[in-house]
Image 1 (cartoon, rainbow, N blue to C red):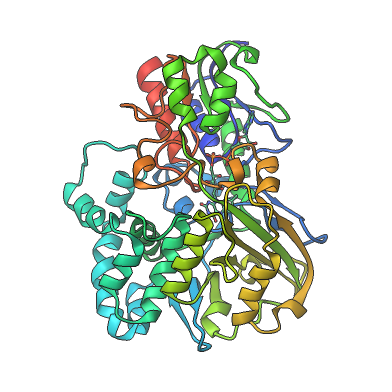
Image 2 (tube, rainbow, N blue to C red):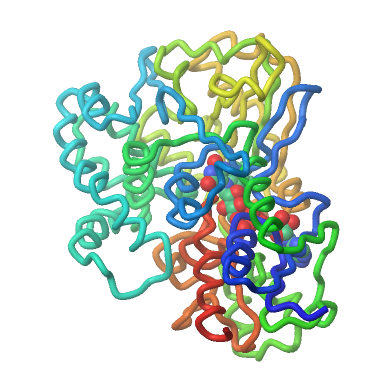
Length: 471
Ligand SMILES: Cc1cc2nc3c(=O)[nH]c(=O)nc-3n(C[C@H](O)[C@H](O)[C@H](O)COP(=O)(O)OP(=O)(O)OC[C@H]3O[C@@H](n4cnc5c(N)ncnc54)[C@H](O)[C@@H]3O)c2cc1C
């Protein structure tokens, strides 16, 4: 069988590329190493029967905000976004919490003297979200909206630690900002880490931080069902080790990271390009815990009981310290922790009256250290009695993640460091980053712009490149 395009890997980017092709009436085959499709979008009973846990991605501001996903009829294929009462809360050591509400004004109000600064910072970005999405959720190119780009870009270039101190006077507002910025998985003294706080803060107000009913698997299932309905073919349990083993196709797109591109492309890739790929930098890893719980997490601060996501690590100094330690190869005693509590808003995740908890912290690349106690200590600090609610737990080290998905090199969940040097030039500096020196081989994973997250934009832009060049 001759295909127009073969895609290796069924993460959000592989599926997005595959869908972009079948929408043009092309003949497409999607190959996936695992027995099920989805990449970072799978949900499973990791702990006890009836408790459904998101193995990787959980909360999807980039999914609901993705211009590509928005263009697809995913609701018709069973995808339902649930908006928690609050997108995110951040408990403080005095038993209260700061939070982001969908409404910008409500969020600004609780920040007291820092409220006006918060409003001034985010209201132009929220109003221009569609334009920002166009400029930043794709490859680097001449801006279509230079003013908006400048408004966002100049602030985004600062280190989060400096931006937080310049903008806000209270520890509360700084903590909220740093909790958002720490999604960068980098030391927060590094340039452009403020961009993560600006992007995630803007998304909280512009589109929310929703979760999909049934788990992130529902996003994968909806994308796959739409793809096959349009005539696409999927083969699972098929690990691709070399280009030679693929059926004939006009284009091959790899939803994998540079290390696997090197293996799959082998000697067919010219030496210069191979050397560039070898220099690609991977980031820190994650350690994750999932819990089956007898009741909701007993947070002291009421906003945490209404939030889909809770950030732990109370002050600017504490979060900055823990993220810096990770890059020094150390493990923080009080790590910055991301907690999500899907079952509060989606009753399909746990048996009646019971709950799930999902949390991870950042650890050095390749770490084998068990961070369960450090993570649970952080939760106990803000939710005394938490441990008494645990019915069962499931943990994953960086090795478990890498074994689970070959793209998570050393436990890096973003397909490579997302610093200023590598965000738009990933995987190597080329006029078009989705191309390789082989005219029919392309890369479409989160190791291309705009990087990590479930949004499908890397796959969409890679497929557009192929359509422009080959069809
Ligand atoms: C713990 C964790 C939490 C996360 N939380 C969030 C979140 O809340 N929100 C969010 O937006 N993002 C989150 N992410 C990140 C998100 O999951 C990834 O950025 C995203 O899935 C990357 O998509 P991708 O298509 O590039 O690759 P992936 O989703 O990694 O998919 C790659 C696929 O390719 C397959 N594959 C690899 N090699 C081969 C081969 N040789 N042959 C065949 N198949 C192969 C893999 O099995 C995999 O299915 C999280 C990730 C993790 C691990």
